[in-house]
Length: 232
Image (tube, rainbow, N blue to C red):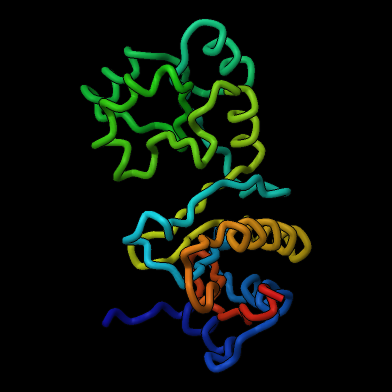
């Protein structure tokens, strides 16, 4: 097992591994444990009581965090005509159609963070499923990235919209901001995201839905949160 760095070990001393912290305590503590020389990202890791192998237990969606994530995200939009102009005016970084498909296929080009497409372009974008899918970049109606309202889609993403999706281990991993945000902004982002995940509970999910909620900074140790109070 790899030895943890000095900063990590110092941060770990601040945490009682046997305790499930209240949200405010956890958010204050995660900022104290972030000892890197850069502005670390604060991340949430939510273990859900679902079985992601079943289609009726998928948990996926998107939500605009009130204070954003602290990261400027590059947006690529597949659209034509007036919708292409709409995307450009909304602040999209890259806008195009078939020529972008060719660029991605021939140049292995991935200089963007989110891909949006109008529904009429999905036949074209579908050719990229094998390369965009594994990277989590494939547009999807559930996350609001397949839409004719490209202006709203682009502006929401630029404003701090994040996607959440349960992985194969039934865990959702989502950034909720930077250490520099401070406690109040991180708490608001946390609450907004957790509300969305709780509301997205599938009807087919049985038993306890929030199995565990852990918060951490990029380089810091995980801090367990009392998830029972979140569901109250």
